[in-house]
Amino acid sequence: MTIRVLLADDQTLLRSAFRVLVDSEPDMEVVGEAADGAQAVALARSARPDVVLMDIRMPGTDGLAATRTISADPELAGVRVVMLTTFEVDEYVVQSLRAGASGFLGKGAEPEELLNAIRIAAAGEALLSPAATKGLIATFLAQSGTASDGRDPAVNAERLTALTGREREVLVLVAGGHSNDEIAERLAVSPLTVKTHVNRAMAKLGARDRAQLVVIAYESGLVRPRVE
Image (cartoon, rainbow, N blue to C red; front, side, top):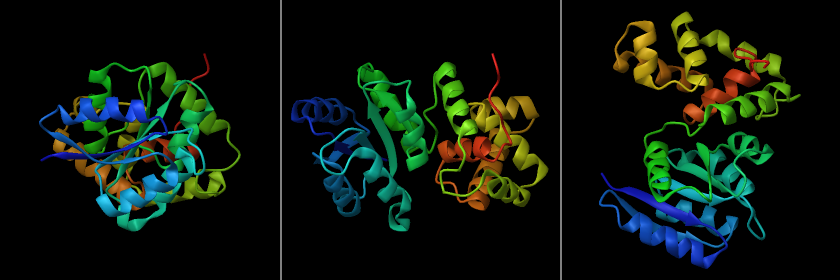
């Protein structure tokens, strides 16, 4: 299966470099380029990419607004957004996740990191590494007065009552950044069983992907950041 990629960045030279890199991979192809957020949304609807590499800062409609629009469109439920940022550790990271992005990547990342990020996002995984950044994300989310969907945290906590005990246990481990294989080893079950629990939790909580499960886990208070 070929991963369809949409490039959204106001720098033509950077888009060209990304296109050459992505198109050089046998399992990927660039299906469109956008110079601003409005174009990115329009192309997402027409080209139906699997992954959008979205710059945060663009003229007109920025990457955050475009990501919110894509995430809110039921017809684009299969589109994953990876935010590109100059600074990996700042509040933009949290805003990206709140907007519905599957994760983020620094513009200074190595080519292999970028390609790996595309594959991870296309598979529905969350780009929440390294651990230090996950801690920052957790802190921002936990200190927020309202959730990403505008609800009071207590309301989001009530949503968790729909989960079984095992699903809550898996959600805690997902929020800790653990992969399905790691969770399976901890719980002494198969990775397929873990995947089933994750998918059921996503369906019950209305989460697009694992990144959104992490957001819900922290905003609901199910998981709290460690105090160093």
